[in-house]
Amino acid sequence: MRRPYFIPLIISALLTACHAAPPAEEAAPEVRTPVTITTVDLGAISDSFTLSATSAYTIKTAVKAPATGYLRQINVKIGDYVQTGQVLYTLQTKESAAFRNSPLDTILRFDGRFEVRASASGIVTQVDKQREDYVTDGEQVCIIAQRSSLAFLLNVPYELNRYIHVGGTVRIDLPDHTSISGTIQSPLAMMDAASQTQSFVVKLLVEKEVPENLIARISIAKEVKAFTTIIPKEAIVADETQQNYWVMKLINDTTAVKVPVQKGIETSNDVEITSPHFLPNDRLVLTGQYGLADTAAIEIINAKEHE
Image 1 (cartoon, rainbow, N blue to C red):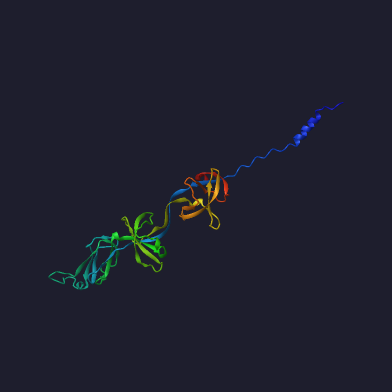
Image 2 (cartoon, rainbow, N blue to C red):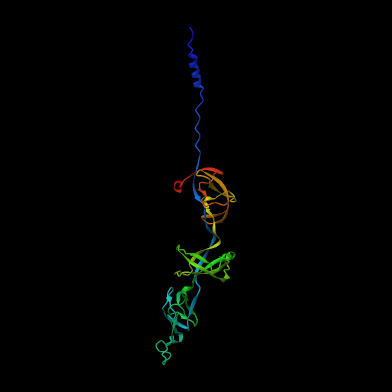
């Protein structure tokens, strides 16, 4: 009896199924680094340093006793504003003090008392004598400072004097976070021996009540560039030696390339780029660029998502 012809075909089909190739593996998805981006800015930047300045009255008048005697009455205290000719003290001479109940001169009825008057208008900044104090002829009893003479004394190390320009306008930052404008005037012809600083008078451009000996801060510009390329300081990456710097520039929405740069003026937040030349619409990686290759796949996210 002859075998059916279809049995070898079944066996061949089973062997083919057993040795069939495995299905191809799926390609791994491309890894993209999440980054935030910024743009290049064209504007002004300056290199500056900050110095301390102390408020002071540059014009002061000393009120002195016109004779030797006792101060019987005092009409002034520190902080008072006085006018020229105002009576500040009443002084009785030591000779008249011995004749308490009778005048020294019966014709003129002089009792030996003098009125000590203000010789100038201003603020009383110092009171040296009090009621019933004994003073000698010409001894200082108080000091009057002219209000309009209020200025700040800018303390400048001698090696920085070349950056101080007489007539220049500066901003005076006060401890209460307010600021006023001033003009640099002539320097004082004397150095501080301990700190080796020279004082420059900074005259206020607006009238403001400021106590004497208040310490403020004044920024002085060393170099100013009015129109240059500026990027955020956070966008720059440096190597371990802090000798080479670069940024990651976007060539499209998913790829960033490494671009070496040269820095210029640097502030606390921004950096001037002197080379290469960037366009205002160029996009740079702001955060997430550390460890990226020369050409890296990126994913742009906004700052809130990054946080």
